[in-house]
Image (cartoon, rainbow, N blue to C red; front, side, top):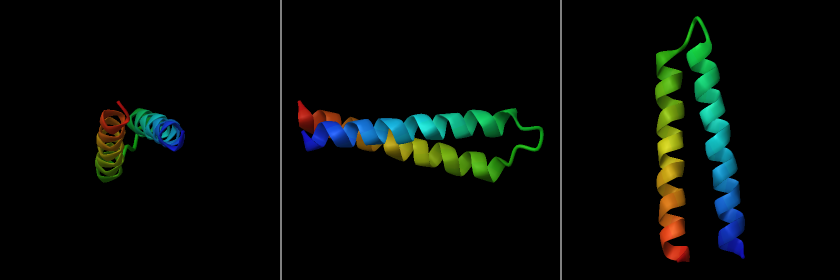
Amino acid sequence: MAVEARLRELGARHQSLEKAIQDEMRSPSADDLKLKELKRQKLKLKDELEALRATAH
């Protein structure tokens, strides 16, 4: 059960980062460094999600 809760939490954070990336990209004064950091965080979360899913099955 704890694994499922962690998966939901990470999934929500992943979605939140995706929204932040989209918002930043739409901004006329988009900050490339901020975008790069957001994308790095999102990729790290994706890797964590995939690892957790692999151990859950």
